[in-house]
Amino acid sequence: MANTPDNLKYAESHEWARLEADGTVTIGITDHAQEALGDVVFIELPDTGRTVKAQEQVAVVESVKAASDIYAPIGGEIIETNSEVAGSPEQINSDPYANWLFRIKPADVKELDGLLTAEQYNAGPGA
Image 1: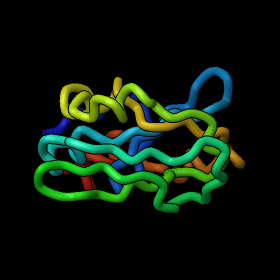
Image 2: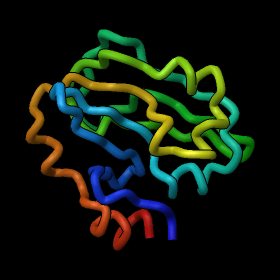
Image 3: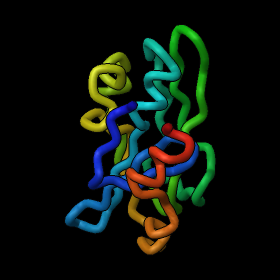
Image 4: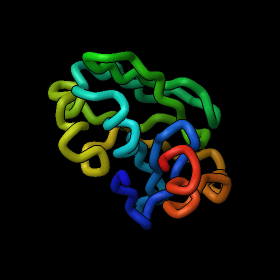
């Protein structure tokens, strides 16, 4: 069973979302996703300032096996990207929850309520 922290929300497309104290939302890919991809070798992150809708394709993670689109679990403005992980994409494989991809200033923070809990995620796509 993949590692699935209880303090995060999950999208069926294998992204996680964490609401921060300042109202922004940090996004990354799940342990299940990085395991399925294998060794991550490249990450293409979205441009800051870009406004996205929920379920919009915003980034790409490439591994030795495949390339996978990353989707915004909620809508809003991309306010920060993790350049450190873009420069060393293999960090995703060691800890996908510490090595986030981007942050969003949500258009509607209530969209998080539509995402899955860890228990729901483990019962569905992450199982």
